[in-house]
Image (cartoon, helix red, strand yellow):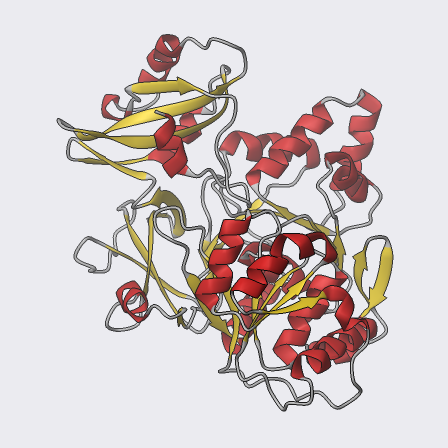
Length: 490
């Protein structure tokens, strides 16, 4: 927010067709602060939940909560009521700011939970008094909730200092400038959209444009006309953009591709990027998508280079200010290359705690302060390759540790496979067996033939023993395949 004062007359946000300057954004955020404070000096880390679609109003609410000394708790606009209620209860929210589209959904719940209900329209006018100086770096700033794929979601608490470090790291590594323009199509209850896109852009004096609903045609048009200079998305979005491009005439394909080549950065994250998608996108646009690795708890930790090598299937090297190591089952550092181990991270970007869960917080860290990510990777020529999450993507079968992501990457090369996901299923003899769910390119796929082909690509112990044809893979709100419900399909 302090940076914004130096960009007062620059364009900050394009939302619903309206252009807002940094000065207008700061004025709106100050109005939110005044309304929340109601004459008090500080909110003293009160939890302020808000459910607002990605927009100018979203950012003004977030900044206003921070300016008033509160903890911002963004709610996912696509979550059902039970999920929203869980976050309100678990965070012990003191107040809830509600966009008109969600007032009817949440009014009764707020009353039942005794949460102060604040319609967004209430912030159109606010008492005129001075707002506090910028909050102290050590204060809690935000609670984001984990996806809860194995247990109930946990509230990840980050301080203002944590968030600033995460932003500074990416602004340096990805060479953000005030002349950049980025289109946000990502949900804003997740670190990818909040930090990597919106916060990095606004820290730099750049411009963010919000797209209310994803449209492949609109995204391509923004690229083709030069309206944006950089773009970030999840793999499923790139898949949809490729599909749209392939449906166009040769002349239109040339126009779209030529425009996309002018962007200075394209990033894929939040889920593993299949190599065929990376290669196809490169053939269409000339861009090798920059892959990176991060988590809600740590921000971004690894990234391919902005200017140097971007290696397919790898997520690069540790970012500035990030300490990262691989450890074995006894938590001893792995110094050799090509040896799998758990990723552990330490540094000022790492979160403070899980909200009101001291035992879970203590369990998440080693005695000397390393955060246990639970993700398994290996180092290849100094660059890291993610093998999967130990509890989800690492299948323990017959004494082997098998990476589901590696099998998926090979399967996607088969012409009969459109999309796929691999899981481990309990088995009395083997511990787990490998199972593959496939979205086929045509009805009635011949899984025996696919298995024979796969036998030539990977060792026999990695071959799927169960197959399932599905119309779609279950995904969460950021496009990542959710493997617990996928296992249930078997």
